[in-house]
Image (cartoon, rainbow, N blue to C red; front, top):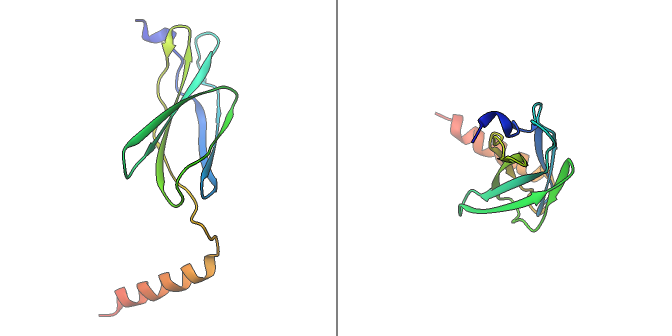
Length: 120
């Protein structure tokens, strides 16, 4: 198997939680693909359980849905061509949003916790 014939890693991989149960992933094709990219494979692992799913995707964006709220996932991504799967991207860690995005009470409670920590 010639390493030079498989695609390199995708470029500018980004993952953003758009709701408590979904993550939007965007990327650009590999800088060196060695021929046409036939598709992409997305690996999503729920960190707490180690449960991994992998999904075949096309295009340059994908919305992962049906996730658990306020949960950390690692996203790994690779392109493949007719020679096989290419070089995997770095792992990205994304946390889905919590149910209620009201930031005020969270900030207050964080400040209280910090002030206790700094009391000697």
